[in-house]
Every structure is written in C-alpha cells, then in structure tokens.
Image 1 (tube, rainbow over the protein chains, first blue to last red):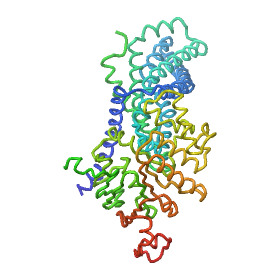
Image 2: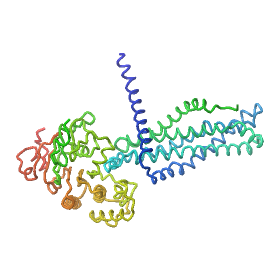
Image 3: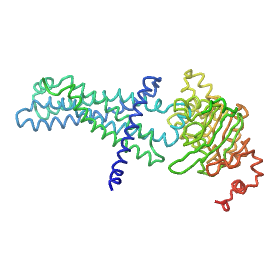
Length: 265
Length: 257
C-alpha cells in the first residue's frame, strides 16, 4: 500500500523535476550560445518587432485600465479616512512593484508565449527543426537565442511602458473624475515613490521575460505530433508561463524587498 | 574500443548491429549495412517497417539504443549535437515531407545552408541559387512561398537545399511518395543525374518499386527490423524467396506472418 502511495506521489513529482530540469538545461544552453556563438541579428530584430513593438497596444491597454481602476478603488477607500490625496502614491508604488510587472508578464505570456510555442511546435511537427539540424544548424542557436535576447530586452521596456501609462491614466482619473487636488496627488506620489521601486519593477520584468521565453520555447521544441500536439503545447506554454510568473513573483518580492525595501525611510 | 582507422574499410557508411526501440516497440533489431562510396543503395520494405527511422539514424537525427554508425570512418554515435555538424556538412537529407521552412521563399530556402555557413555576398548567393534552380528546373519560382508549391516542386526545392553545399552523400526519404507517375519519373531521373554528375553516394528509402529499380545499384530489403536481403536489382528480381516475391508483386496473403 505504501509502495503504491509513493508510486502515485512519486511519478508526477519525478516528471515535474524532469520538466524543470529540461527547461533549465535549455536556458543554460541558450546562455552558453548567447555568449559564445555569433548572434543572428536579423532574427533578433524580427523578434524585437514581434515581442516588443507589436505587444504595445496590449500593454498600454492593460496598464491604462489597471491604473484607472486602481486609482478609483484606492480613492474610494482612502477618501473615507481623509487620505484621498495619498492615492497617487499607492497607485504608483503598487504599479511599479507588483501590478505593472505581473500584469504585463501575463499578457505577454498569452500573446508572445503562445505564438512562440505554436510557431516552434509547428516547425517541430513538420520536421522543420529536424531540417535545421540536418543542415548543421543548432536549433537553440537559431530559434531560442534570438527570442530569449529579444525578450530580455523587450520585457523591461514593456513593463516600464505599462507602469508609465498606468500612472498617467490613474492621475487623469483621480484629477478629473474623482476631483483630487492635483498638486497634492503629485507631491505625495513623488514623495513616496523611490528609484528602488522602479528598479524592482524592471528586475522583475527581466526575470519574467526569461521565465516566459524558456517555458514557451521548451514547450514548442517538445511538441508532439499533429495539430493536437501543437495545440496542447501552446495551451501548456501559456498556463505554465502564467503560473510560473505568479509563483515566482512572490519569491521575487520577498527577495528583492531585502535589497530594495518598500516604504519611505 | 578499437581505434577508428582499424574499422575504416573505405565505405561511405557502415552500420553495425543497430537497434532502436520507440515506445516499447522494437523498430530496428540489429541492422547491418555497408554503403560503398559513389553507389546508390535503395532500402525497400513495408510501410512502418523502420526505413525512415534507419535513415534518420544515419545523420544523427535519432539516437540508437545499441549499435554503431560509421560515416567515412568516424563513429557518429558518440558525437553530441554540435559535433554532428561536421558530419551533416557531408551528408544531406531530403525529408519525406520536404520540410521546407515555411516562413521563407524558395530562394531563401535554397540559400539557407550557404547563408548559415557564413556566405554573405548576395551575388554569390544569387548565382548559386539560380544554378540550383536550373538543375531542378524551377526557374521562375524563386519568390514563391512553400505553401504555394506542388508536392513535386517541394521535393525539388528540398533537394536543392540539401545539395547546395555539395555533400558527398545524400539520403532520400520516400522521394516519390505522393507524387504522380510523371513527376515521380522526373525525380528518379534527377536522382540518377545527381549521382552521375556529382558522384555522390545515395541512399534512397522507398516502397515504390519502380523508383527502387530505376535508381538503385544495390537494393536492401528491410524486414522486421533487419536487413533480410541485400543485392543487385537483378538478384532481387530473381530471388526465389517467397517473402521477397510477395513484396515485389504486392501480394498480401501468404506473407507467412
């Protein structure tokens, strides 16, 4: 009975550890290639367009409406205790430390992560990856390195954009719809927001970008035969990447809070 | 392990006791094969009999469970993916589904191996591509996307892509499957022509007997994971073996299994 229990418990655990190992190996392989092999600039720039440029609308809308609703909700609560003008500080710090990086990462996982795993997965099942290998091209160099580098460059910028738009829209909502005094709003926001908040947001963005790109590329590279295989790989890539972002976010918060403590000191 | 020179008998490819198991099923059960330089060997056998699997082992796309594969005196079993690149410069493969890069035009597909090998001069690339298009009779199609090509054209583009770097050996995986008889015939002639013009070693996997007899110097019959018969096309035709005769005439009953 115990054997069966541990068997039932152990097998998914082993599979999970194996999965983590594969993703980490892919990442290690990519970083090694990144520093030792030539970079395919054209592919890298294509990916910058795909990941960075074309994600902007999604990111702007995400940041804008999050800023707007967060500003409103904060005001509704803070107004009761006469702290309405502190809304700006709360919105700005929350966006920088949590909402900006996490929401952007989730949107990018859905938009870019899905596209990556679908594209690479289709190449896998139509033997295009084998064709690359047969033509003496290492698939990690050709497919993963440009995507990983583009993601590491794009994600911090996208998150910064999301935060900036969120703060701007939050300000607009607070001033024009909720009738907070603009001067107090700005003064409190600037007073309570520190550069370490920005650093934290951008650091998280960088980490989330890495999580998304390797989870998605790995799912694509290991896609199984047929349209079902690619579909499943895409779904799993988005789900796994989103969960990884949410889970890692907690640990990143706790770790980065030691280096960049929150609050005014 | 013996030093490699002792094992090098001048063959292009030597396969010894190759075994491969996929998902609990034993696909290859100890294949021995020897391919001389410059010859065309056809591997025939029933669908799903492991012919493509064998071919993919020869270029390191699949790893065997046991056995050895020697290419020009080098055992490729111990090589990792990056080390295999030097083998893959020597051996080209035409995939069953052509496996063209669907995000690139015909010309970009054909130029890909050269570009990856570091050739940047657009004039040289253009010239080499147009040479290939001429050999493959594909002039005027260079700007098309693979999705807009017929099956026969895809095969020819795939072939152009795999020979542009002038490998000394070409592997063909079902080069005529899914093509009409006329296009099949043109592919057969192309294979013959490449062999005569470039002197390459060719291994053709097929279950199309017309294709097999047309191109082969020697034929190997892969049956139940082993090489069941190995000889010239005439020897195959005259073989009294029941199994082989059944395969040649396409008789399904009395296969004996």
